[in-house]
Length: 399
Image (cartoon, rainbow, N blue to C red; front, side, top):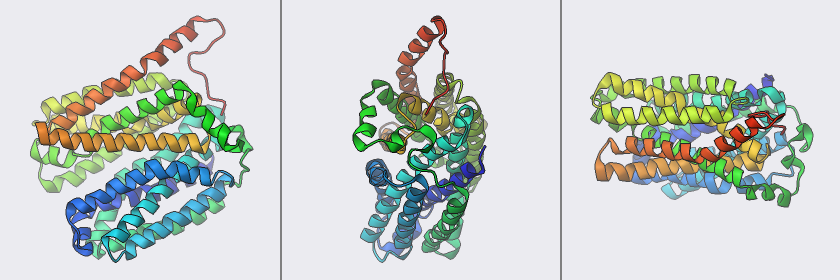
């Protein structure tokens, strides 16, 4: 695996740490900005909306740049957003700062995944995506507790200054460690095409189906993940002080699952997705049924960690086969993933209000089953291909 792929993962880690910073510092930020805790919660929504809507626009705006130059531009925009957040004198300024960082983060994800695919050999591209996604998993494991610890000890603004410092380390590392490819290098196809050519691929029903599956996978996972704290304390009976350690264990499970899926994603893409969704539905339903039993609750929570967001390498591989490995396709895919986060967390919250703390777990199981249904046409095509002479069940992408 090229060393440059690991450098790209470090950049993702910086982005994810900024994304999670608000979640761990809500009370402090509310006091510092003269806002309510729900208003601080809206900063998370603003960040997610900026990612989903602004990320593809930013990717198109940078499409004429070489990939490494695009990453440097996005680092600069991201750094500016975090500096503005750290120095924000008021809540409206903080909203603007989160929108800026959200747009830069989403575009960075798209360009990074596309570049990782181009840097890796065809037979290990799924593993390359997994390495890059480890930046996301380690961000889940360490980003939130680290930013929370810094904010509690030195003030919430220090957490954003720390992310800025992390960016100043990641950007030079990327500049030195990532080759300066041309837009057309690597045979990605979409990188060198005009905008009309890049947009044409979105007419393919298979690509839209892949986007939908990804949304449902992430929606199923985040309907549970968004409410792990109240579920573990309100149903499983854990003390509040135990929750951070349980979340670290959950993050460790995602790192392990991501590694395994990355190994299998290239040659067994659909099988991995079917298995992951099936297990996730079982784990979420089991969690809902036995949430009041502490040992069972932890076991099912770790199961969700193993087979939830860890499907990312297989999801990305499927999307690239249906479309291409270009930055715009990957960024739009990330937008659909973000949509899954928004659907899972928002509908899960409504479900809690109506039916109690077990409801988001049942919602997650239902979304996982819907995700399985979206894979039925793909399974049918694979069976047909397997019966035809000279065809492979799942080919390695040529992007």
